[in-house]
Image (cartoon, rainbow, N blue to C red):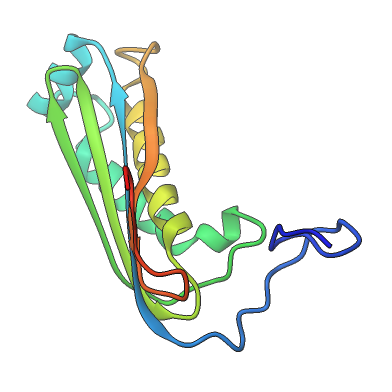
Length: 157
């Protein structure tokens, strides 16, 4: 028998049954960044991108993506999210994204936080690609998760 939770004894993909798990408060924080040219950074910072307010659109896209994660990742459970915060911090080399997602439920929100960051960064790329097609999305990762049977986890520990 496989120790992978999304694979059954015959090797077929399956959605894990979480029906008997206890409802607990769960939170996950994920981060990533997009590196870009100084010209693209300047245009975003100055609100000079032809498509509009890049950071506002990316923030909304990331929040919406967190809410739709189960539509994008086949074996994720749909979750009632109680919090989705998405911080976008521009610096001289690009934009850093940090998503904090929470729920009171029977399964964690790691995938929702990672999806929020990924889609926000992809949206930044889409909106600024006319200025810089060589932008690089990188370092998308889980920073922490709290709650649930497996307890708390923090990157680097």
